[in-house]
Length: 406
Ligand code: ADP
Ligand code: MG
Image (tube, rainbow, N blue to C red; front, side, top):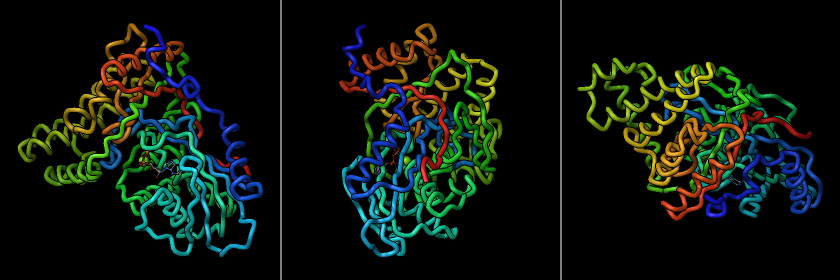
């Protein structure tokens, strides 16, 4: 099978250089605003290895921050501006938007929602940055389930830290970013995305207990194993109500089972009380309860180097998201089936959809040295079966949000 049958964006396969991105963002700032920026910050996207739709059920998730950052370059406006004026240029949209820090308009929905929400959280905590010009440049694909939204929120909060010279507790920072997503973007997400971006660590996975909002750092240091992410490049918009609907179904199941959250329900308890749930709610709860158990088992298996078990749990997670939670889609299923077809003999340890679902990416663990070949094979199968081109890339667990300059 030749790789030419599956175009795979050679240039984007390896992690982009953060210093190059920072230089480009600074250059763009100078072009747009006429003087160089004073501050530069970076916050990564994330990929979740296992533990999907468990965060808002107070369960476990097992993500890593990825070597793909949202960078913000910032400075004071050259000309006198209102003391609360913010101008922000997105290199993605090649567009400059404006808003005021004294009227952050929570109901206004556009790409600045994530920034406005994060500014609001910082100001609530007494960190007021004053008037700013900003350039946002991101290597996190947007709408791909890798949390470009959380990266933008966490980058904004990190920028406010840089500008004010104050430091937020990183867990509090993820909470304020999560609240920005809830109240300004209208997305009732759990804590995983913002937590991963704020607290990611080079070389480490985060086993996050979303009940206590604490994380155990688990090294991913087997030189023989690599993380491969493949973007299906589809995003099924549906009605947008699916995520809040799943969340409500989980809350309702917990209530009918007499538990505060699905975290408090074991598999045995779920089976014993199955009659209390209608078939749909049972399947939703069955996914969440099983997924929380799979996540802690996968973390233990990974630490023990039991790769076959890690892989088995990833495939089981995908099947459960597809059949019980119903958040997969045909394109994600094709990618995971292709990975599974290549299998252990072909160097694939395991694969599953990652992120909220209905499109976006799959994550696979593969044997190091075979990433490119595996990505090409999966890409060829995907092209053949869907007519679509997938975009693969490799990553290592990356450092979380930080101030780069200023
Ligand atoms: P995901 O978080 O999975 O990437 P979301 O739909 O939650 O997908 O967030 C994507 C949104 O975040 C975009 O529609 C846009 O509003 C905003 N966004 C992401 N990256 C950028 C960027 N580089 N510039 C401006 N807005 C961005
Ligand atoms: Mg998002």
